[in-house]
Length: 520
Image 1: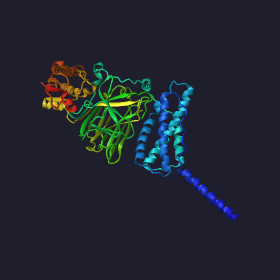
Image 2: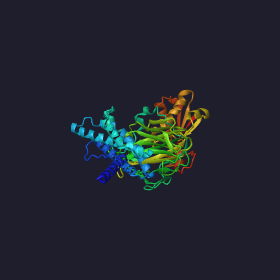
Image 3: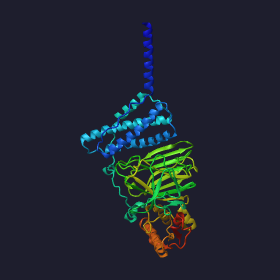
Image 4: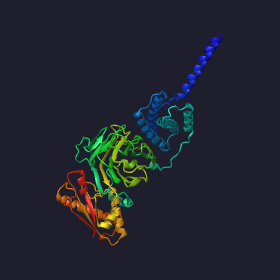
């Protein structure tokens, strides 16, 4: 009898111990994905993306709890998922605002699903951080507390206007509006392109369907032509850890990067994590960087306004900056935007069209280590959503055109750009014209000769007329936008007659397409 009682106590003790161990190392009970859709596209997309990420993190959490170590690829996936989850979580107030004016029953169902998705995101963010930090045994009660807190949070109402709330479903690719429609908006645009061209790419020498000859990738991409839009474009390939790298050997201390973007197939179901990332890296391999890099991602999601994401990484460690910067560019990304970037020592600035969205004085913590440029797109639907870039221009900066004009009496710049075959000035050129106007306003005795030059494409007579029209367009911009007295300006065109570089390469042609300002 005593022996049986003793055996029973041992069995009970073992069972209690097993239960305790199981509780200490088991995952929180898995949340169930809602089976039906609400019928509000922004809500349905938010819920679907939240649970897609939740299930990914839950799987890795299960590996960790079972004692299976995470390899480098698992860690990369988790890091990327964490950034996506943070973006998605930040968009929740915008999604809630879309319930205004919806019927009571549908609003109630949507609210329940949003709260469930928020609970999934809260778990996912907390768990992903713990896994990345190596804390793989999280007591169940901590997760319960986190979920209770999330479920009790008060839904926030966003105060954006109705026009901001409405996600556009326009998938047509539209050319930029004519610059003459609204000249005044460019008068304060302060981006100035670098003055020494390092790399120019319009894919003019590449065959349609090929991957461009002066780029590298670990994925895919091809040069294409698109109806209604001039020129050739590189179609980027979306995928995990896919990078597209132009053959730029070394970036200087001060420089500018410019490129045009084209988007097709975007609508209010485009993912909040659909992004184009620009990476400045310490190597030209297929990763963000080994010891140093910065990454800036541009949002393309359409069902709400999403943030620009900025991150720096130096000396093999997370940097001081991991930011989400507000900026509603939903309409801009549908209408062939121009992206301009200026790097001046540690300072990093980024404009989309003529609006500056990022200006961080010390984003680059260690100077002269970021020598390479990389592009990456993530979470676009294959076969439906397409992202293209063209007219990539990298130029060395550092010369103040105002001081050079005053000291030397003459400057030449290829930073004033025009639409192909026309004298319509591109908006991104107005920063340079603004600097010229500042010289003229500072010293009213100065008079300028404006001289236009072209490359050798086309015949001599056409190029001569085009160069004259372009120099006259710059003169008119100084008069109409910056209120310079026209009697102080003279325009002239020289066509292709005075090249300064080889007309057979893209860089050479770009250098020959220039405007000179000469003091009289």
